[in-house]
Length: 84
Image (cartoon, rainbow, N blue to C red; front, side):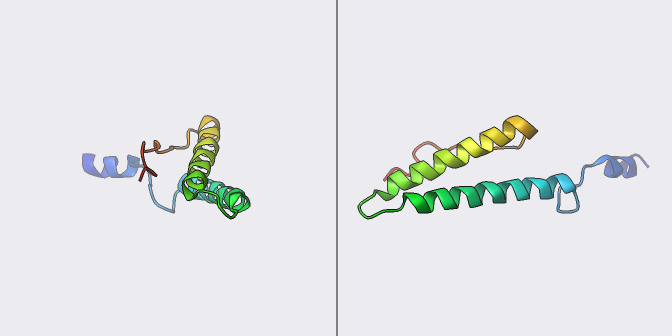
């Protein structure tokens, strides 16, 4: 009987949980905003590394701002992700 009580107390971590779908919606908004901003950065002769750094910084800033508002989990930026 204790096992059944534990199962009932577990939080649903799939799309049945509105909090999960809200996080996906917010992530989609961040992705769309970033895509639009990155497209404006594209120009002849511009380094792809600069564009990637711009997009990484923008995603990090948007996710951090949202994290401050709603405790949205934001993965840490990997150092050297675009080194090469």
